[in-house]
Length: 120
Length: 108
Image 1 (cartoon, each protein chain N blue to C red):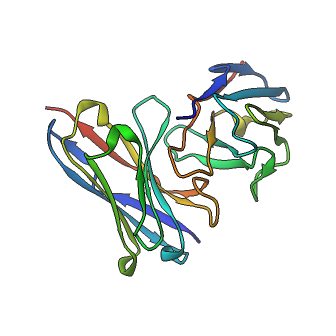
Image 2: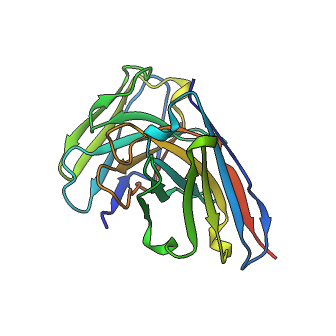
């Protein structure tokens, strides 16, 4: 069974930083592109970034380039999102999602998400 | 970037009804369109991919159609479990993967 479990969210002050983690199980983690998708309270879904199975290729939505960094540790079957210079508008549930094999950007499994709240 | 626009934003219907949600892309995306269902407090769930392919385990009352810039999601014979928010999404190039703003399906 494919499982994705996010952690690392919480309350952070504006300008602060966090590292979000996603622990994967039930599939060969290194074979898959992985993404982070976020959802502000009461709002829609916004793709954030993704990373290739070997970690050597990454893409970001333009508005988050430079502040967010996606990475992975295949030996630990873990995906990460380092978020810096946080703003109130970054408040959201952050989901990790698996991209279906050979299909960029089709999210076939999602975690339950971790809530990041940016507030003073 | 490709923009995805869904209509309506909110839809009221009754159990047993047939409903249709529309998604329009700002430029042609061929058939690279997915639909997701999201219930409150849960993650999205993939329903349809490549515009009209039903994901394994999804009831056959869900169907998708379209290509190019206009797509539809149809639910035939609404069940109580179907009242949720639905999102379309463009995919299959490297970035960015864009979602529609969502359609909330409410009980009339």
